[in-house]
Amino acid sequence: MKTITIGNRKIGPAEKPFIIAEMSGNHNQSLDRALKIVDEAAATGVDALKIQTYTADTMTLDIPTGEFFVSQADSLWKGRSLHELYKDAYTPWEWHEPIFERCRKHKIFGFSTPFDATAVDFLESLNVPFYKIASFENTDLPLIRKVAATKKPMIISTGMANVAEIFEAIQTARQGGCEELIILKCTSAYPAPFEEINLATIPNLRATFGVEVGISDHTMGLGVSIAAVALGATVIEKHFTLSRSDGGVDSAFSMEPEEMKALVVEAERVQKAVGQVSYGSTAKESASKVYRRSIYVAKDIAEGETLNSENLRIIRPGLGLEPKHIDVVLGRRARTSLKKGTPLSWDVIS
Image (cartoon, rainbow, N blue to C red; front, side, top):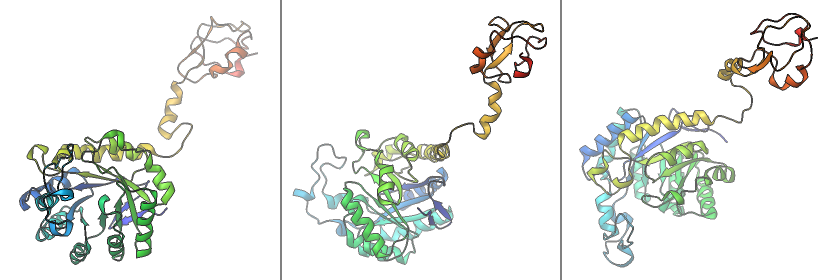
């Protein structure tokens, strides 16, 4: 599996995790706030900031009843029509350029999730470096084909998708011209319950589809993302806001700056700690071998004296014979006199 390259950043198991801060609708319809979110995200050390490119009319119909109305009792958006929700959450297209410019200023990647072909065309005019396909669009094969035609790297979230649907999405992307593809394990619930995350799927996705795998994490906290890295995730996407108390469509499950900063640090630490299958001492451990136990002379021993449990002990440090030899040594005689504190060796035993 080749390493994915975005700009000057490599993504793969040997690289530090690529971390994306998702702004979504947390700008609360303020460009100043949106730019502040970019500033704060960059300060945490993330690699990229993502926005979403759509309008309410490209997402749904303006019908406030039936299936166009959110009625689920446990939804964050209960009691709102889809059109109203998307109208509040959308990022005005005229904001994209200043947001991306602010990203460039901070030397992080600014990119977006397009939701229809017009959004792709618009984002191409801004020369975005790569694209994200949202979970709810992973079955929109025409959209995937449109993005693939740009020949730019693509990230696809797999929320709700079964194996066949993931295969179709990947096949469509590949056939459309996308050579650098990443898929994200995702549970499309907001916030997502921990018992439905199923992180064990991450290594299976890599093995099944032969692509780089990450996580789009909608849980609270950073534990799930950290665990995902331990299971092989090379990309982490988390929603980001200045403060959850400010409200907003996604604020309830978004990370605040200090939390994101901690995620950046801990994710890199875990990636380094995963390493590879290894037995025996590491470079740092080699120096610690001296503190293992070994057989030492515990009392002065005269030449010819019998070695026994009174004049020998298994103690630290580890410069004497290994403890496994104690039964062979006991009952034999000393070839020479031995002072207390001498590490036992074969050449002093008759």
